[in-house]
Image (cartoon, rainbow, N blue to C red):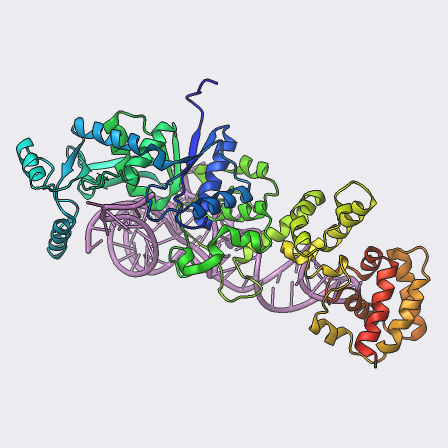
Amino acid sequence: MADRTDELRVRFPPSPTGYLHIGSARTALYNWLLARKHGGRLVLRIEDTDAARSTEASTRAILEGLRWMGITWDEGPYNQTDHAEEHRAVARALEEAGHAYRCYCTPDELAARREKARAEKGQYGYDGTCRDLTPEQRAAREAEGRSHVVRFRVPRDRASFRYEDRVYGVMEVPADTIEDFVIVRSNGEPLYVLSNVVDDHRDRVNLVVRGADHRFNTIKQILIYEAMGWPVPDFGHIPLTLDPKRAKISKRRHGEVVTVEFYRDRGFLPWAFCNFVALQGWNAGDDREVYLTPEELVEAFDLSRVSRTNSVFNYDPGNKKFFTDPKAIHINAAHIRGIPLDELAAHLRPWFEREGLWDPAWDAPGEARERFLATLDLIRQRYHLLGDFVTLGRAWFADDFDFDPKAVKKRLSRPELAELLPALAERLAAVEPWDAEHTETALRAFCEERGVKPGLVINAARVATTGQAVGPGIFDVFASLGRERTTRRIAAAAERFFGS
RNA sequence: GACCCCAUCGUCUAGCCAGGUCAGGACACCGGGUUUUCAUCCCGGCAACACGGGUUCGAAUCCCGUUGGGGUCACCA
């Protein structure tokens, strides 16, 4: 198919030196959103130029993270190293055209001069020692056996460099703050600032959305595009996400909580995670915060509404309940409550399987599946994480559930329950038909006869049947659990907590 | 240090560009209500325009400065 020149082409080029963290995930998401919204294409490129730090495992982890989030790419993944020759060719072309030159200064010399400049409080960018070497001077240095890097010859005919950022607006910096930067190492390997441009050009990327920490690279890279006579893409930089102490987040400092896989493992719905991440630095301008489907977010998302203010990822190390940003958990809970039941069931399946609780009958259309979905619907209202279904909700799917000690203490300690519980079980066993309405009538009548408050019996029954002090209305619990399990558990609780 | 960016409740943010409603929403927190329970739901509350000047009848909104925070200054990406 012929290329449409007006087609939006964005990219996500992670460097495989670690895990997919929350900041990169957001960059990927924004690019994906843009591609979807405008019918464009997203290119995935692995920037493994830094061979020393790049690992296969890291690439896998990143791809896995993206797949989990539901971020799909239209092209790639390409490997940057596959194009190393091309990068070198461009460096040569730049050199031949006079836009770049060989620099023979050694790292030691550079460091010394930098130190001196720093001490004198001057600019300490590259001082241009090799910028205008004559062929003879170059030959002399080659003869000395000196190796060289290739530096870009930054134009000195302007007072400043500027470009218009899609998020930050006009970016303008004094020209003398941009030094003649290195584009090829002394070992012949091209550097990111060059390779990235060559790749983006080859991949026909026309909008670059990346972290605000790249703003100065953009100035340099536009210079390269111009020197090559290539069309310059649009750039949009997005604000950074900081920790509560306003420091850049990193796995090294913050641990798992900043990695995508952490959210997967802790029971986040992938799209709920995306929903939260999207809100760090962007909002639609209305009061909406929950986007249950990708389509809704794609529709609402717009680069022009991305904030210029860094956001703080609000997590509190050591907090058991809020092990990550409370809002992230809230959004996850909203999604758990709000998405279609069959989708929820699909996301839950691995959780049940890991616990050995999955029943294949839940897969096929039929009564078992209907009951399963109805149970999910009943208990999902107060759950925040997928794991809650098999921990807090285990009693709905297995008999070997745990009793919350606090619940037992609070609701199963009154001595009269020793006698009430077995009697209640017996009474319930005869209720016909078994549904919320009839079990309620029976239980209330039972309490009336015994002269006890329904609350006593109800709360005891909740703990007895579910192990928890909180949960859905008890008669819905009865109906959901069924007669057999309900009565057996109530009787068993009497045994277990009051038996001699 | 130089350069660039940013600055509204504890956090995410709306409002700013085109000055003029008690500065709005969400999360968290607190209180009340519903209920047999609450980790559900409903209602209410607490809580912010960093500071100082200026322009203006009027400034969160425009201008300047200060302070604070962040980013970048590599033969990393």
